[in-house]
Image 1 (cartoon, one colour):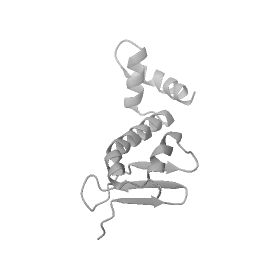
Image 2 (tube, rainbow, N blue to C red):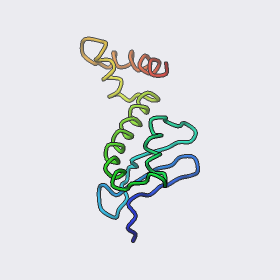
Image 3 (tube, helix red, strand yellow):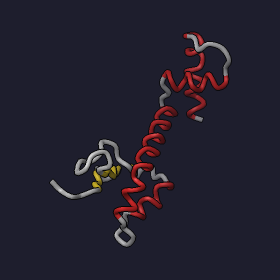
Image 4 (cartoon, rainbow, N blue to C red):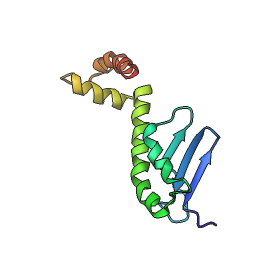
Length: 120
């Protein structure tokens, strides 16, 4: 057992930063910050700077992790929808541009259109 509040798990390319927000002394299943060196998200730079030795403030980091955790999860979910839209994603997009029922025929028509639009 440890009193560590923050853990960083990595394979050398992707870094998962976790904390114990959900349960004390137990790292959360979802990281509050994911840094992929092959695809760096510039919006994470200020958050990474907070983890540096010179400005490290545990209370400040812990207070920001809840929001970071959910924003990161939402961004990953949206990105996944752009890569491979599921039926719910296709339905969401279709109902924003097409009136009427979301039938099997409409779904089959819009699956490739939503995929193409997401790639563009």
